[in-house]
Length: 341
Image 1 (cartoon, rainbow, N blue to C red):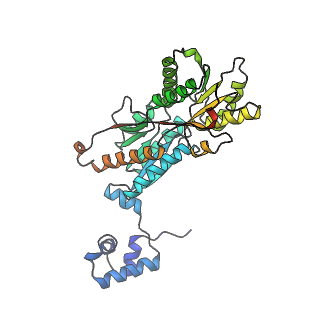
Image 2: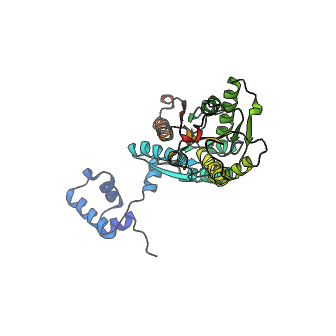
Image 3: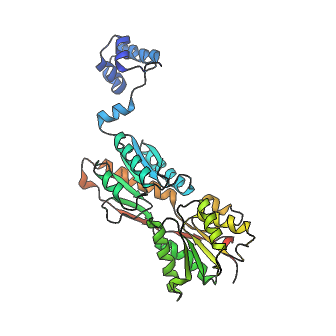
């Protein structure tokens, strides 16, 4: 294996000191033109590439921002990453994107990696419902911003969507369409987003004079299409099957749609379906999916901007004030819920 070329090799080849090579790289105007040309020729000849990570560690300022999300297989989080990457790039930074796969253990490992790499800061959608991982990571003194979660019990910044309002939008729409028995395909109960969307659904039912028994919850272990198909099979097996289903995200809704289609159930005539997130695939489904839209790109960009603001204020902490930003969702109505009852 070829050895990497270091700054000492360049200095030796150019017949100058290591300090002169460093000046050519970082402060070229301070070096005589003839010497500078000799050093640049040696750099080119040897193929020297400076160690950016070493430079950052010496300067104490990384140019990398960490982003840890629940599921990069979900287009919602891809859009969050797009927004964060755009804001980071405008500030001259890169983004290291990691996927916890909804696992508290994997989340802990990635947070440890971020600490080892001394990233500038971290954007985090927590998988650990206990908050233990956050408490451990906080000891490293690396700034972080919570994404798609309200910062309950923490002092850090957060950017989220009002999921209680979003759940209410979905179920209010179904109630207004005449549905009185609704299933909620909810996902892992430990996730705040899942609980908040259920709270909103119950609020909408209460507004209509309907009790909590009008909502049949079908929990799933994951928030993906396969879990949605499983929930759809369970839904079809109910003796008193609800006439509508609200899903905690669009991937679950697409899975439910697949399951009921395979069983010959008509959507929306026999079963109305509403999802959450409004990912790109929602509009492209076999029956275009009604969904609660989250401004995912905006969420990622705002979170990155808050993190940049905090890290720029590290030398003057009073210049940064932690903020909790809550964005509003929007209902996008499509064919999957439009039958008249």
